[in-house]
Amino acid sequence: MISLKSLKFYNLRNVDSIPQFEGLSSEKKFELKVVANVLPFRTNNYVVEELINWDNIPNDPIYQLTFMQKDMLLPRHFNKMADVLKTNPDPELIKRTANQIRYELNPHPAGQMTANIPFMDDELVQGVQHKYKETCLVFPSAGQTCHAYCTFCFRWAQFVGMNDLKFATDESNRFQQYLKEHKEVTDVLFTGGDPMVMSLQKLKLYIEPLLQPEFKHIKNIRIGTKSVAYWPYKFVTDKDADGILKLFERIINSGKHIAIMGHYNHWIELSTDIAKEAVKRIRNTGAEIRSQSPLIKNVNDDPEIWARMWRT
Image (cartoon, rainbow, N blue to C red; front, side):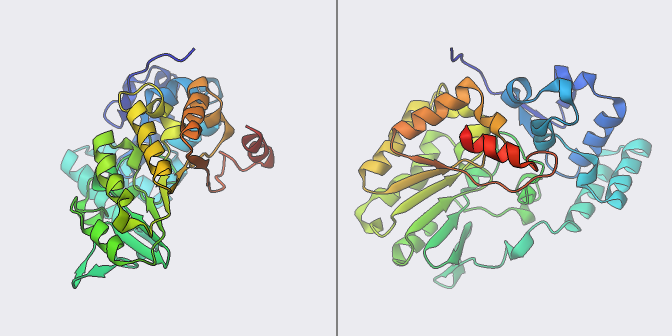
């Protein structure tokens, strides 16, 4: 039986309100808060209530996947922030210390802010990467957050409130004009963050223009998202759920292919009734669900986990 659930976020400010969090040792709580003052922390009530086994902390894989661990920071960085929190927890000092550490963490690997960003009319096309001939990545500005943050995320700089580290479109139609002029592009990948945090109306603004005849060279639309794992209600009971599925159907009916890049990291994310229903509803539109995942220590570094995820 699928029941309604309202989305509730947990972050550094209200993590202590998670009932299950009370059962952690004071040391574990402090370690999380040290790291979460540097790297972004966000989870939600679905992840907390339905995916994590709180009797298996800290070894539970989804806990490891979504809750900060001490070794996510180098010892010198961890100790630097820990000392500030212990001796002088002034908000401005915490922020300044966090930013100093962040700039030492390679916030944009592989030159994300400079490499592969195309030009049009002698100006950068913000929020677009054209790394491969046939494929463009689009980073919608309204999709630069997630339903929960993964501890392995290499795009953490999108979420820490430092505007000079953020990479996103400027909400104009420049990326669409760029795609219109580059007929060699057949694939568009909407990524983030997570585009599926956007409302249906926002999502339409990005996708619907690509269904027009002048974009007939665009054959494949992909959406990179963890929503199918971290908030499957998006496709089942949320107010935009039916509209999103109808949008997927429109894409298929226009003759294009759509793939939801599910980013599943563990079979547990596919095990709940709501997750299964989300998969069913998405597949019924004609959209494909694909998955890609890194090998993550303490999460899925076991061949049986991968085998079971494949069977699931």
